[in-house]
Amino acid sequence: MFKSKSKLKQKPDLLLSYYAEITKSKHLHFGMWEKDDDLDMKHLLIAQDRYSQHVLSFIPKSVKSVLDVGAGVGGNAQKMLNMGLSVKAVSPDSILKTEFEKNTNHKIPYILTKFETLDIDENFDMVLMSESVQYINVIGGFKKAREVLNKGGYLLTIDYYHEEGIDDRGIMLAGHPHNYYLSEAKKHGFTLVKSDDITNSVAPSFDFMSDMYRTYLIPSLKVIVKALDVHLPFAYKIARLLFRKRLKKDIEKNLITGEDFKKYRKYMLYLFQLDK
Image 1 (cartoon, helix red, strand yellow):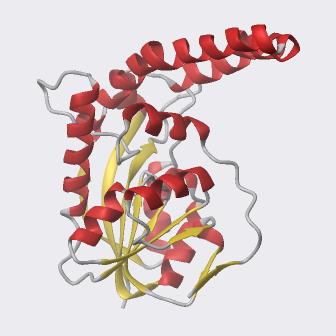
Image 2 (image 1 turned 90 degrees about the horizontal axis):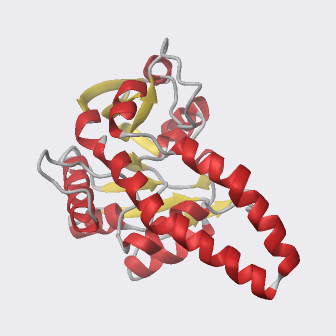
């Protein structure tokens, strides 16, 4: 059984929810693109599926139970369930919980809490963190992984990291310091078994996101602002100010090209094994 230690008051990630609604994808993670792929919705879905299949191919054959941390809208969890694995999900996002349960037909338990504060009297053969590493405190994450894993269990992480020594103050892009993350893994008893650098194949996702921003998000926001002008003039003034300055600036800082991503971040897949 599982329980949350306290009533959760976690802000949902509205941009992720918007992304899920626009793409109608069963995955919120980036894709692995091939050289000749067009940057369109069709190839995004193909790239995301390619990414998912690649990640899940790293699951050791001995694994029978998985805790999917930051499980998105259920794409990976459903595939693991189809592989015959026992799966539970944990995430603090209430909006994504609704989409997750719909996409998995309510067959996979979804624990609404942060991973670091998870309270569960069950252990797992593997913890999966697919693009959720960046949202989790490094030390707290490794401590909790040790707590919920069986001895000799696995931690499979896929995310991007900041390379120490590179000045990235001009962009707003998450990512733990790379060497620090690996050193903390070792300190907490996790031995690196396999690794895979997929930076180059993931990078086109950022070019796609920039195109989506211009094609979908900006027009949508403009329509909303115009609607406020008609029905709620006071709210319109506030929304217009935010859109022109703060919101637009913050969004555009998160939008970088694939080439810039390769310059500032390294996207790595790591399979760790907990000491026995």
